[in-house]
Image (tube, rainbow, N blue to C red; front, side, top):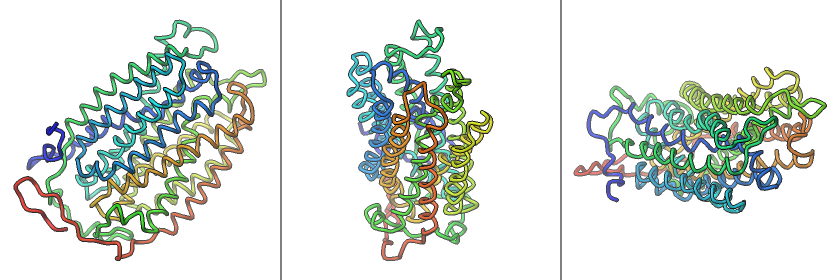
Length: 464
């Protein structure tokens, strides 16, 4: 397996760094399917005969394992290199779909928890962080743009997975033409098998085309002094072990937790939520199942676009300033959604679109925020540890929304008013995150250290 080693992925002189983003996108577009789970959520509720909260746990477990595996394996990913990490991620992610399909076919919900949630979640975590630090090293002149390119694929995964999943569910279910159709469990199981095969192929393409820059490499014409001179940007380095001892790490942890919790509650419930917001007195909704599936795809565009646009913008505005927008403006938009979102579908869609763009932007900007505060030495490992905030949010967001909704009624009979307590709770969380972001200051010099860059094979190490 030596062909997976980091030394085998060092780019030769003259390598075009713009060939790296497609490798990252190939991986992230696949694992981004996690955002399309709402497409078959109602089908799983009917198939297993359980509550929204119990089905929501599948997604929550996957996000918990994403954060935990990223935290535990972050240093390993930095040491072993992106190819080996992306290869392992592909095996776990596809394997999770296979085990999950077995659980659906056999009627054993715990196997879906184990497969998609636990095993697939490990693939999510390793895959999520594996190309990020590599792209930051390839684009030291534009770290926000780099992380936006790496992570926008994760937000855009549902853009592909949502319509494809809807079409495949209709293909696999002979009753798909019936009025009020909900996909059968058999159709969802076959969907999982299909996704396992397709995603394995695309993720392997990403793994075998990724490259890392040689030690000491920098873009032609790049002057590091232009980056060092900016507020909150350091030219020093902090190890992952020391980073978690700093106040700054935990403040950014709170910022990410609040931003993610607020957004994840909507995304995890996206398809049924828009139907419920426009439910008529007779129990029918003016938004059909097909339109709701399209809305999930639209949110994916917002998620993906926000990751690229807002993160790239942060190279100009600074990371802390852009988070003030995510959290401050976001809290106002959530309030408007809770109070007036059901007035027209156009207003609802507009508010949700901008909110989710902020959610995606927060994800894509945070690796560059960490690079600014802690340097490039172990930014991948630090990022992995920070993603435990995503794990916590993956539990909190769905539990808040599903808990409120289960107390209000049953799926298919809820209205916009049932969502107000959950949405107002999200407003409070965003305000807390806003205050935490205001408190971020440069890391104290006592945490800085001298590091030795990895040498190119046959060349001596370089001090930095």
